[in-house]
Length: 413
Length: 105
Image (cartoon, rainbow over all chains, first blue to last red; front, side, top):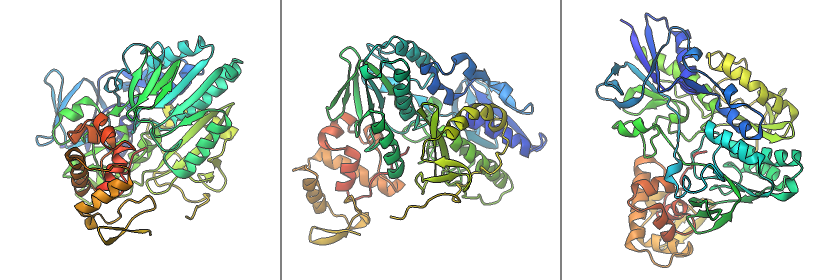
């Protein structure tokens, strides 16, 4: 009798994991079930482009089950909770799924209602987020009629999906208003809870430099306590204020609600605290988490889900064979950072190594931490790669889970 | 590695002044670190947070973020900022003698 692997979540991480597992196991060895609550798979990197009219919402959504290999069972259902002791997942309507291996891949959820005033007066009129499709589409209309004033981009707190996206939004806003010929009438401000433009010093320096070059004011260590939509003010917990005419806020993130309802599964924010190198839940060898759902000190980005997938499939195999797991996930992430004017820069980093300059994936490759047209083209090409290569679980030649060191300039402190 | 003297004891700290050896921390040291951080008196509400930070560090190997503190310590985020105006997680970690909390990205 084969084993049953249940994957909760049919987004980037869950779909890639399911398809990779399908390539590894015959249906008689392992049955694979993916559960998600709707049929719409959203290409999340495209959300950044919607407000600027560079992507159409309808082009970003495809059928979830169609991204899965035919051998994968897809169940569309709301997840009620996981019973770790009974090794079952309870779905809405009373259906129970038993599992031999459980993979939690239900991503991160936006929690705008957890910030005072954020969803109050002005929400989706002059206070927006572009982290979901309705928000991104609404923001597009708001930008079209924006004729000048203070535009503020604010990150409420960490963790957040795609930590570079708000910076990219600021860079693209600078480009967008220049295109419209009204940049001199727009004050752009980037507000972050961090002490710099990004977490790690080298990247913070490079990205902070770009903000400065583009005339975007940087406000740091601003922990968003309240949004006053009527008064047009962001207020921090230490009572500083940033005025705005239009605010773009990245709301607080948490894990899926069922994770919090499932005893022993999640941490305080609803993420699954798996081992950072094996992706296995301590004390529950049959439970793994990947992608944004995992409570790891790694970036919540699709590239991380991709790199984790390689280690996940390997470790599920070792678990099923009764062998010790490989602690080989190094937190590898890479991101194209769109900087406007048909340029982008690439960053590549992991748990221990901050983004460095040099080239990726080897000495001859895309420049790192430096704007280039090649990186912009890479970002655009990525959408095709996502649907046709990454989601089907194919390997990308030369780009693996372990972060490449070759071609990078090391920095010695 | 820098060394500072609290409670007549030499304590190794990192470049930002966070303890690198939390086991060497004592309660009298907390008062001194707090004064350096601009907090003249540690009230019982401060101590709830400081003890919580140490317990979390002992259990998880890192101190909690402000948001996690607000959800789990019994002190709201708003009050945390009143108690530790210059960044509650960092300041409370420093006073509690644990390394700087690792944020995520």
